[in-house]
Length: 304
Image (cartoon, rainbow, N blue to C red; front, side, top):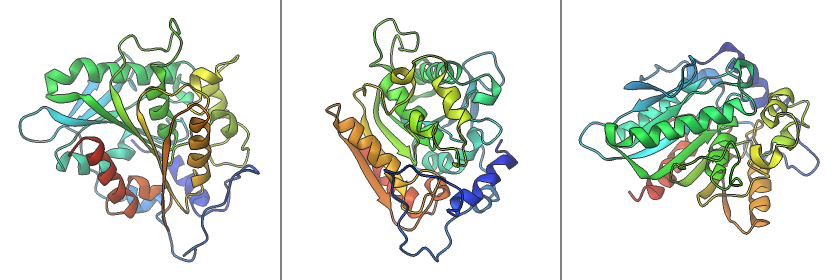
């Protein structure tokens, strides 16, 4: 379940405690007097429930939750990865329940992934191993649950945006790398919701609300940058979309723009979309302009 520690990010959402490096731009000041959503605005809504829990490992955090539409399949499917600064103490998969329920109501199945954060035995390589195992569980369970696994859209919020981008790139890791999947899930599109794809940069932001220890733990010991930081990895074949709120102080649009430049340097396009006058919470809140735009992008990616 979501944790009280998540509320500590509220100050950052208000724009008072998130440091940015010299080459990053501040969120747009337009309509800065209008309030943006804070975490209680989402977390205090009645919380919808998933249909089923599917373990992918023996640990109590090694499972996914399935949101299954009514009617016969195969259902178009979204793989979803929550954020929370890569820390289980801050957030778990149910922070995504509201948008998962909204997709289910639209006839789209959701495979919502839980994983070990850096504070629960994760980091490098554990968190990545969990994400890979959850994706493999989706691939092997698709027929059983009536899911269309031929055109997966991976959606990740904040730190989960990094993990979604990482998962799509894992298939391009060198042959023999322990984190390269033997049979990759066919991810056609990644939608990063205010993602934080650059672990090296994140490790150098001491005033950011996520701190520096968690991204450092995600990098691990030694030189793992090209196998852990989505920013530095060779991209896989998936279409890449970076969507940010213009007033997001946790993951400002500059993060997505920097990622897009890095991908262009590798011969790939990454689309950047910025939603005016919204922040970090709106990205996973039904009824927001950010989520309305994501619905359009997800349905287009699924060919609906």
